[in-house]
Length: 384
Image 1 (cartoon, helix red, strand yellow):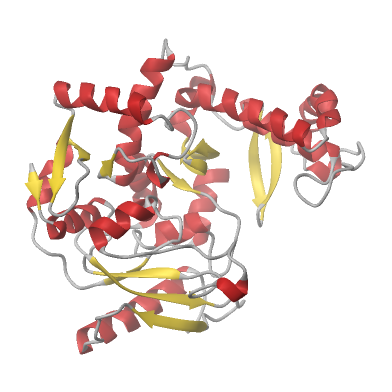
Image 2: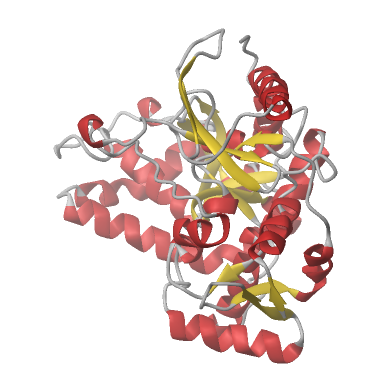
């Protein structure tokens, strides 16, 4: 199947509910989107909102931060865990990620040893017993002393032990105060029917094959070049991915796509192919999160959208091209600008706004910008 770049862009923005005719609403809309894409990436940095909030506000027109909080820590329909990096996904996927939890727990052990903090591992049973006896617990509640390592990593022994227990699935996040986790035993947070669901994959191959298809769904259209789209445990080897991609093509579950001017093949789920035939969307604006599923693979974003984006939070200030926390601006099916918001309790100050080269601000675009800025500020309880 051969398509133009414009068709590819139309497909992706509609797949991601970034058009007026595909926009979602309320907590049901959040669940619909996360169940479709599998997960949204979590990052604790908060200038105007955290990454997961920024992802969701661009799809859910009436989004409020408390909606996601309730789904995570009141309804327990969603859960914090590892998928594509640290993420939020459906609680019903708990059993599917047994292997990832095991890998991440081993990774915590390796990290603690690398930092000379492996003594914390001797307190895992002690900390688990404390949580079992006392219920909801934060690291500060468990007095085991401080770590002796440097500025990176956990400050307390209890914090390191709880982190291991969380990664291994023995405890879960009961709630968060800002980005600080408060824990409880996982059996007190998830229903018995979820916890008792066995790992559905008999072998690693079965799991990886499922995971490859899930990741295509996370982006909508994905090539097999290693990059941001394939980050995470089990998906980092291109030949293994290709084997399962070929199997899915033979089974008719995914389709291969050729996009004009791009050498690499792309893959989409066969059931989504009808989205390729739709016309250009309305010229509505959406502000896109820095770790948004749509732009996980920066090289792919540049190839399809002709838009180069780098998140510069970890770039020294003197070397930044734009700014510390800059959000891309989508209008219709094109990235037309990027802007840098400033942190403020009650208002949404805009430090800088950069139109992309060749973009002229039309009256329609100006109106779309004003409307979206108003809606965006409202999502986070701020005034312009």
